[in-house]
Image 1 (cartoon, rainbow, N blue to C red):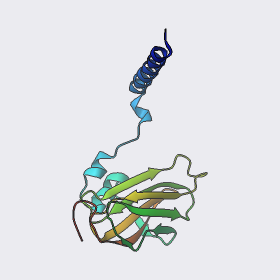
Image 2 (image 1 turned 30 degrees about the vertical axis):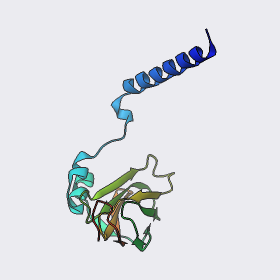
Image 3 (image 1 turned 90 degrees about the vertical axis):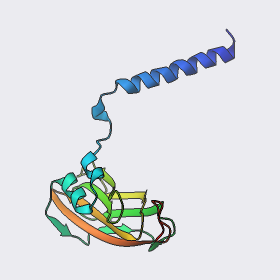
Image 4 (image 1 turned 180 degrees about the vertical axis):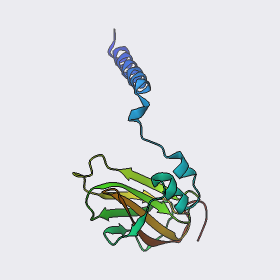
Length: 157
């Protein structure tokens, strides 16, 4: 058996095994998809879908760092740091987006986790980023306006 044929067979078998193994994994291992929250059209309905209408407190312990003006709404860098104990989750919403829920991050071990998220989001127009934090069973919120010069969802501001 020549070396090229042997390499081809190994690669084919390894790829087939990986595909078969992934298809047999239980669905519990895959990320949870909050369909109702992504289908919601306003930040309030997103919050109700995610957290069942919580009592919220505005907090200065949530720091949202973004550029003051985003030149391209398709890639707006966002950094969120939370100075609260036992942070269970962080949700990011854009109040003027067609789909307001931009992301939700859940932490497996709130006692040992540093509540910090850095990501990029898509904003359709100048809007407020709303960050909702669940910490120790309570809900906290912070806002920051981001000006967008070129829309990320096919619009211009």
